[in-house]
Amino acid sequence: MNIHEYQAKEILARFGVKVPVGYVADTPEEAVEVAKRIKEETDTPAYVVKAQIHAGGRGKGGGVKLAQDFDEVKDLAGKIIGMTLVTPQTGAEGKLVNKVLITEDSFYPGPSDIRELYVSILLDRNTGTNVIMASTEGGMDIEEVAEKTPEKIIKEWIDPAVGLQGFQARKVAYALGLEGAAHKDMVKFLFALYKAYEGSDASQVEINPALKTADDQILALDAKVNIDDNALYRHKDIATMRDITEEAPEEVEAGEYGLNYVKLDGNVGCMVNGAGLAMATMDIIKLSGGEPANFLDVGGTANAQTVEAGFRIIMKDPNVKAILINIFGGIVRCDRVANGVVEAYKNIGDIKIPIIVRLQGTNAEEAAKIINESGLEVESAIVLKDAAEKVKEAVA
Image 1 (cartoon, rainbow, N blue to C red):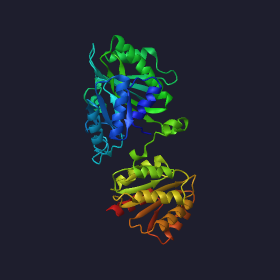
Image 2 (image 1 turned 180 degrees about the horizontal axis):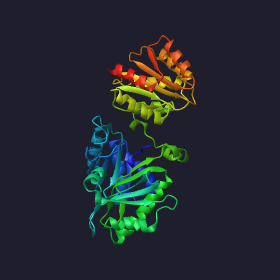
Image 3 (image 1 turned 135 degrees about the vertical axis):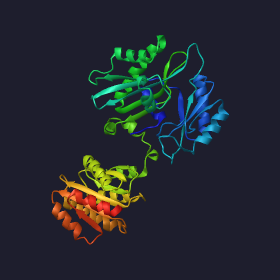
Image 4 (image 1 turned 120 degrees about the vertical axis):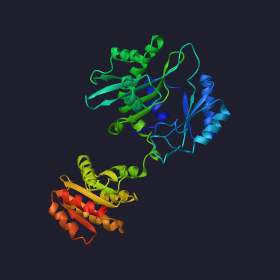
């Protein structure tokens, strides 16, 4: 589950990660009240106004601005709230900004230099361990750094059974070129960050940039935290942070029916049971000359209701020229799915695109008979190759 920056910082702060003082606002007037509160708490000379959307690169799109006084806070918040922010991660359609985060300005002058660093923690699936990734090139796209200057990426693998060790935290801080008080604070920062990563069941914690301030403190100037959906039952408070306005409406609707749906850019809708079979089906669609319009896994308990919901969601995509249903009957019998397809087809009505149904496994022959004798414009296939040929004809 993705969450906003202000929510991520709230979680990190619970575990002792230092973050700039800041509060979220829904209106320009509220932004001013927030700025006044921050002024009382920190005596900051300026304020940062940050758009809150589930995407990075907000600064490049004009979603992060510096305000010198309360009037400028109100003006900038008024311009950012309600804007459609386009960043490298949103695509050309952009995302609507509904709220802003107002924070203190942490780039204050002091006795030493100010530096922007990169720090993240995530699971390395190849080794089955957690890994800290860090770089001196904070504030930049880490993918670009990895491509052009991979030697600037620091990696430290952590055995989850043992946890982060002191020598590892010191090693990372040293590799970032930190000395003295800044080195010590980075070690504390890494321990708190790792504690937050494990304690919140995050799949990724990314701080970009992690700021070394002029007085040698380490702050999470920006924060991105992704939570493992499978662990949300342990974190009821974090589950309430979900913002469905930031998610694709079709994916939200699919979730209400227990369907796993991801929209893609192709022309062939697909409905499959099982993630592995879904991936294979998408490959077959591409080999047949089409492009997958979605990933849709109905799971092992497909019935008329879930099939109908899947149909409706797929057909909301105007680019879909055909639908391929590929079900392996194991836990769920094929004839049960076939009856669900027929019932859903009748309930929806007026379906003008070809539908190819490939059912294999338990009661596959009975299922084919149900489809063929339904009188509906639905083609059945048992062999995957036949289904691919029919898809090819449909999108030709």
